[in-house]
Image (cartoon, rainbow, N blue to C red; front, side, top):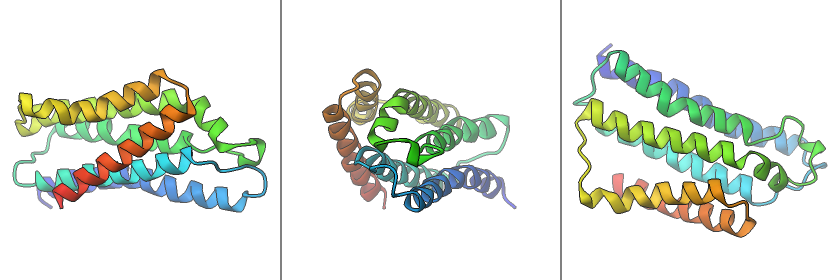
Length: 182
């Protein structure tokens, strides 16, 4: 197994837990659909997470020629992927029937969700710099801002309109970035 194959499989294993968490929790939600209204925020968050995870996965695949294996590389996997596992665990209630609306539950956890995602993004930028020689230029600032600023808005504001708009924007932006990679 090449160093990249080991690194990539480790990343895929952990980030796959996040994808499985979204699918499993939506399945559990379907089983308990009698009790709670699903709303729109949790499904929008799930779509964004799946697009963003796909972006991370494809971005890493593009780096296979320059990826190395070592403690820093393994730390990068943990710092970038584990927040997604955490987010997909807390974005759904353990007992959906106990909640009148999933949007209500979403707002209870939205700050922790977006702080975790901000940490993951910051770690991804840092490790791109340290492991892959990425050097941000002024041309990178708008793209970074288009991810970080919505996260900050979603951390600070607890308004349904802000969260709908922010999540829809993040879905559109992530879809655009994913299309540009492919």
